[in-house]
Image (cartoon, rainbow, N blue to C red; front, side, top):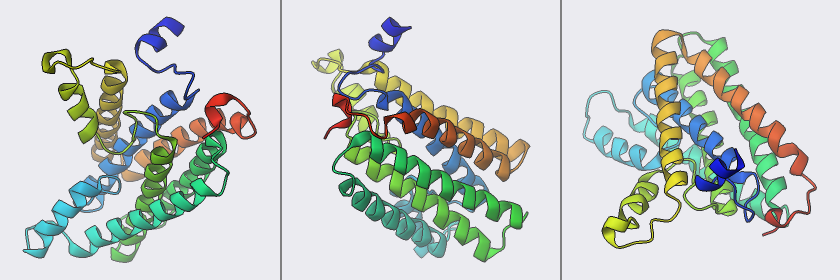
Length: 237
């Protein structure tokens, strides 16, 4: 198992347990974006590139795209990223503590979104925007934490640079092909989260997807919590 993790670049003394835990967050990103796009009306809560494009569609009255929904997602994501930036600076750069606190807050926001779904089986506009805002806040916070943790090729919400690196750094392009396993795992994790999320939305309901995301966050939090006061080298900035 250790050899397999080393070969896939999931075991890295510079980052401790962060690589597999960030892969877990990448799966969660796929889950929540499946919810937002399929159940909340053609909007992303994690992929802000998509939302800017959707906003462009919406302002020229393209069907099924909403200016308020896209703006809500972008504004809430920015607020979450701002909070994540402040959070990153408030823990003295301790990476273990930052990750644990981020997961705790993210879990609370996903739980809030789940409660809103239960409160309104068919979300009215107000509930819909509140769910979008809660999930976008969570993803903004997650993205800011991943940026501060700076584990290569594991941004958790964006795969454009990961896929670019996979091709541009490959031996075919004359590169050294660094971390191909990690890049493939990150891509597969996003795909798996989106596919499972879409399946649950279409075959079960939105609450099932958010409940799964919440369970995964709790699992991640349980794994991260023991490192709250760790003095291992990877926890230091």
